[in-house]
Length: 365
Image (cartoon, rainbow, N blue to C red; front, side, top):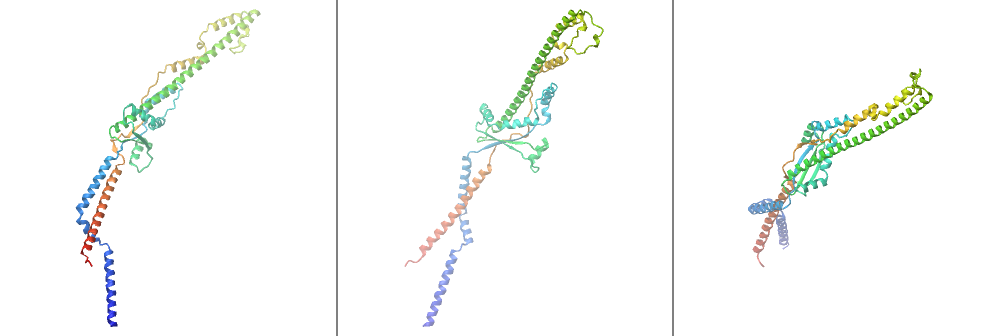
């Protein structure tokens, strides 16, 4: 009896072990079975994934696109500044310095391009994309950058800028960027001409004032000389000295001193000559030179130069969608969600169906 009891207990332990082993096998994931389940529903998976991809594409079309046209500019060469240099040289001959360099012109161009008010003024005047935006990026010198290598070769140093004009509509983006750059270039030319002509007008005014001052000083000196001669004539007449004395040539050479030893006749003649001088420039070399300088500077006509304040390394490009990679990322993300979601749905549906079948096949007590 005890032996039978021992055997029965061993059989119970064995059945319990088998039950645990089978139960653990059911809890394990069978990858081959999963692949089989997925492969059976591959049409559904591909169809749902395609629908999600299509939805992603539709969303990218609904998202407002940002179109951008780009250009690369750098300072002009010396050849393009010959007209300005010629104007500078003609002014230097008259001691008029405008202090306008090639770098100053390009810096002014970049400042004006960055002026938001000028951009809005141009866009509103030309009925262009009024809500467009312009970004300016300086190209940092980097020998590994092909673009910068090109600019460095053409200009001698890497000081170019990338201009990017973007708008939500692709129409006229390129033309708007081209027109705005030309508009600012014209503004720079107007500023240069205005600056040069202002310097010339200031030089004319200064030269005229200096000449008038020197002329008045010469008249005052003439009045003093006439007054002194009149005194000398009066004294010589009173002294009875009509003719020059023997020591007249030993007197002082000072033109402002009129010794009575010259005699009444000589002093009277000198007084007549002094009074007959109505234009001090005829006897004053310094004043005559000032008059010559004034005439030459007054003969200057308004200066008008037209220069290209920049060069293109890349002219404005055709508009492209900015951040197009984001749209591709949205499509990939939707496709991934559709693919993974469909696989999960197929697997869950399979195991739910199996569980129902197991319950229906179990014997009812």
